[in-house]
Length: 228
Image 1 (cartoon, rainbow, N blue to C red):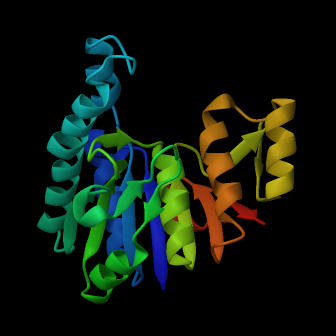
Image 2 (cartoon, rainbow, N blue to C red):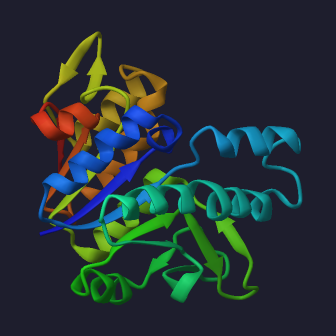
Image 3 (cartoon, rainbow, N blue to C red):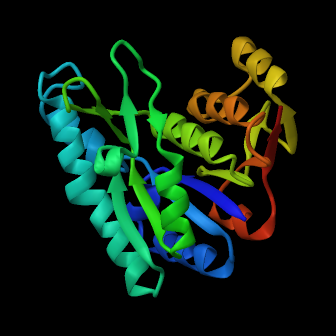
């Protein structure tokens, strides 16, 4: 079973969360593609240069992801005998952008090959602009959605800081894409959920099962399931 998992980067910043992630990955027999966000490193680096409008923001973000979070995560997984390989979208043209497009094209056949060889790809959310070769920072939730959809993955899991999505103080066990849109327009969700809920609803028609949960919920089955 092909399973795309998106983590925030928080899991890399905190040793206990990283250990729980490793235990979770070790407990499943799926072919896993892991996508990570920027954790605490990326906002700190971008703030230091004045934000994303800086001309070198994309290059600096790429350095923070490829030179910081990604290798740390790969090293931790490898130390626990998981066959992790660190990549970003510009490697092997895994994710590339055509001119005037903001949606990356995913070379899913490359990921399929790596999975068939028992590798665990660990992807930084970076894509390559095909016309210039420049690297562009992607929203990690969107990158996970695009990758899972391209792979026709059996499962896509978004790891957040709560065991599912909450509205009006209550966890939602299941929600459709249409309901997601309505809830977002109504402001029913905490704003921190908006990106992941949008991405999950877009992935739902193309992926066997889409869920949003935290690391404990990942192991215990406490989650929000998003359907088409």
